[in-house]
Image 1 (cartoon, rainbow, N blue to C red):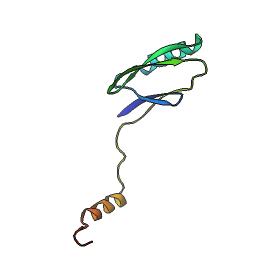
Image 2: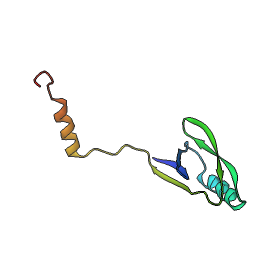
Image 3: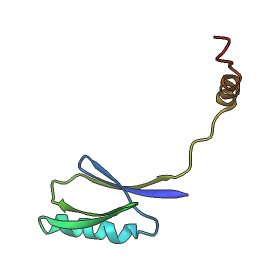
Image 4: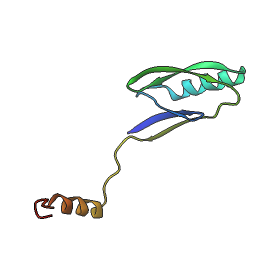
Length: 90
């Protein structure tokens, strides 16, 4: 599963599922093209935020996997070894 993000200057926003990335991209481009305007950025688990987009704004819209990385066999072995430490023997 993919999760969509938008970075505006130094701020990163996690977008909720179902956001139309193409539509948001058009709004951002339009705001920059007109010299500057506020664009509402929807956020997961929080209320939307209005961001001033200007021609000088640095904006990235991208997707990343939403799943946790799988552990390797070595990591699993270390974790299982740690579970068997008896703290009364230490």
